[in-house]
Every structure is written in structure tokens, then in C-alpha cells.
Image (tube, rainbow, N blue to C red; front, side, top):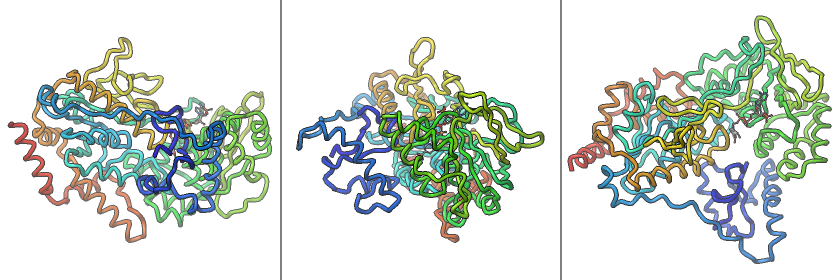
Length: 553
Ligand code: NAP
């Protein structure tokens, strides 16, 4: 009904912190409420008390538009993303149906698969390093955001399609090369994300008691590579440097009631550590002022609803100063929320630890000899310094992409140079045949899960254009030989049946304690469960046989 804005083709879409429903265009059909995979849309009449501020925010988005529009006038028509339609008649000329390998299985990968599979005959093989798919949705979204994780139901549906195959526990760059993939596919889409942390280059960052918020999130979420992360919560204060949404996620979980977290998919080791935590305050320290806060408005509202959030007097003054000068309406909304926060000097109102948002603190160095005991900051724009005691200092200053073997890489930006997803040589600008990118490795570590949908669609459009133009070399190996080939390189390959067995076992373990799932945190355990999975389903064997016949034909 063209009532949700900004849409992918409108300005500001990629930057939008939330989407807004036009009350004039909306016909209350409720389709968006049931379709939204993360349950983010609710009828205005059924909002909880905590959700009520969104009514005013939504209205604010349309007010200027409506004010300048005569009553009854329709919104200007918006052009949709051009449909991606590979011409079936070119299949025969270009080596059969389009075969695409996708590296990674997070949101960008799954949305790319979804987009490709809207076309008849296209085959998609997804290669993932871990035995469990879905990338940051599984290992990055905070456990108290279970509705966000519901997007995996959509991903499950995509993965169940006949022309989709999972090759899990297979690392491209180790078990398989780019050329191996190209021998079996027309193209490879890398959707491998931005797995590294941006590092803060100050003294003391190597001391015990320092770390990064992204590692901490992976630890909380039971990522197998981070189960042994030393997280010491036997002290009163944690400092988080940077105030993006990741910083808010970590602070929220550190201050949450473990009794409530116990009903999420949080890793057992994290729950045990949080139950024993002595932390009383988490300080989120930003180097700039309140108007430049990196967190988004919905996440700020979510934070204030779930924890006691306070400001020191100097920061409250900074909020008021910014309110007097800032005109941008979204920033003003954030500042309004900040101005209503409690006073850090007042006694705590909750038995749970509280969160202090601190501003204008530029990190100078970590204090401590044997381990971190605190942090020294420059007060931004002055000669003053400020010292804060803490037993744990976490940097949360963004992610950074990792170079992909055999592809060009822009080290500064942490992305693979590309033109709308088509990988290009950085110097000549010429496309690297058969190589594409989607998600954070394409555009850098910004945006939400949904941002990856239009990002992936753009990449798929480029890829299909190239296929239809005959610019992609046909695979030299038979598609029916792929499974055997991959197993020769990685005998511990986990397929869709293996993943379904892991998934079912996790859900069953969780059900005992009224949890959505209890995750395996060791790869060996996952492989044991996958190995015990029933033999490949009849459906899979049938699909394999059909592929062999198609190859012969
Ligand atoms: P981010 O939003 O880019 O925030 C990075 C923060 O680090 C900013 O406050 C930045 O301050 C600060 N920073 C950077 N360099 C610094 C330095 N040298 N010293 C001190 N501070 C420094 O990154 P993020 O929190 O990792 O989030 C990544 C993306 O994921 C974002 O788009 C975010 O919205 C998204 N995300 C969304 C959700 C959600 O929707 N629930 C959850 C998690 C993440 P300056 O602004 O001053 O540079």
C-alpha cells in the first residue's frame, strides 16, 4: 500500500533508524504486522506502555509532509527496486541454470539467497565456517532481543527451498579457494561480514581486564571461538568506550536480571558469570557530546525501559546546551529522552546495576600494572583529564572487515572495493569476474538486519545482469560432483540435515528450562550431534539424483 517509509528507493532508507507507517496511506490491513519477521510492527491500539513513545515519533515523521500537502492528495508514486529476472532462454548459452555460491550465512547471505531463489532454476550453495548458520543473528544480536532473532524463521524457510544447499563447517580460504568455488558456480557472493574489532590504540589495551564489546557479545551468545574469554565481573564498575548500539547491548545485558536472561538463549557460561557479578555501574563513555550519540533512538528508548540510566550534572548541562542549538528532529528526540534521565548523584532506585551515559571523554590510557584498574580520559576540547576506576574496560568502537583471500581489499575502510556489489579492482575499477559482495564486507559495519535486504538485492541485480549479458564463465565442474568434492576437503562437513539435528537438540535442551534453546558452544559437540543425524533425507537424495540427471542431459 506504499505506506511504510522510507522505502528502499527513497532518500534516507539505508540510514533510517526505524521505519514509519503513513497514517493516511495505511488501510489497516495488518499485512505488515503478520509479515514482519521480527515482530517490530504492532497496531497503535495494542502498544505496551513502553512502546507508546513510538506513536509520537511516527507522527513526527509525517507531520511536515502532511502539512505541505493539500488534504486528500496522494503521496507521489515511488519507483520500486527494478525486478531481478534472469532470462531463462540465456541459461542454455551460459552453461545451464545460474549457480551461485554464497560465503557466509548471516542476514546479507540469506537475503541474497532469498532474492536469487525468487527466480526459477537458480541454485544457491551457502558455505559457512561454523556448523551453525545465521552469523550475527545467532552470535551478535543480544539474547534479551529474542524477537529480533525471530528472523531466523524466515532464514529457515529460505534454507528449506529445494534449490538451496548448506555447506556448514566449511571455511572458504582454508578448505576451499575462490577458484574451487568458481569451478562449480557462475559466481561467488561473499557475505562474510566484518568479523574484526576496530582496535583502540592507547596504552594499556593489552592488560588483563580489557577487551572489546564485540568479543563480549560473542561470549554472551555462546560463539564457539569465544567461550574461554576471560570476563571478570568481580568489581563494581565496567567502562564501555563508544556509545553505538553494540555498547548499549553489552551494558543492557550486564545490568539485566539474570533470572530474566535465564529464559533466553544466552550461553550458560555467561549466565553463570552474570549471576555472580558484583558490577554496580556500567559507564558508557563517548568522546563527543550528546547530540553526536551513535546509538539509535529506538535502542535508547529500549535501554531506558530495561535499566536505570543516569547522567552526571555536566552531561545533563551538555544535553540542554545541545537541545538549545540542534534542529534535526531525530537528534532532538534523542536529546529529549536524555534530558529526562535520572541524576547520577542520586541514590540508585533499582537493586540492579545502573548505566551512566558519559560524554566528552576521549580515551587517554588504561590504568593499572598487572591488570586494568581504571581509565584516564581527556575531557574533550579542554586540558582537563578525568579518571574513572573500573575492573573491566571494553572498547565498542565498531567492527572492521577482514581481507578475503584472492580478492582486492581496502584496508582503511575494511571493505572489498565494489561497485554496487560487483567486486572491482581498486586501481583500474575493472570488475573481478564472478566475484560479488553483500552486507558489511560490501558497505562497512553499519545498519540493521533489514538493511541487508536491499543491499543484497542490489548485489543480486548486478550479478544477474552480468549472467544475462554472458559475462560469467560457466562452471567447469558438474554440480552433482560438488558435495563429494567439498567432503574430500572437509570430511566434517555439516549439511542441512546436520544443522536441523543441532537445531532440534538445542531447542530440546532449552525446553527443559523454558528457554528458546540452549546453545552448544563447542564445535565438537555440534559435530557429534550432526553426525548422529539421520541419513540424508529422501528429498535430498532425490534432488541430488535430479541434478545428476540434469548434468547428464
Ligand atoms: P557505531 O555505531 O559505529 O559506534 C561506534 C562508537 O565508537 C561511536 O560512539 C564512535 O564515536 C566511537 N568511536 C570510534 N572510534 C573511537 C575512538 N578512537 N575513541 C573513542 N570512541 C570511538 O558501532 P557499533 O556500536 O559497533 O554498531 C555497528 C552497527 O551495528 C551500527 O550501525 C549499529 O546501529 C548496528 N547495530 C544495531 C543494533 C540494533 O539495531 N539493535 C545492535 C547492534 C549494532 P564517534 O561517533 O565520535 O566516532
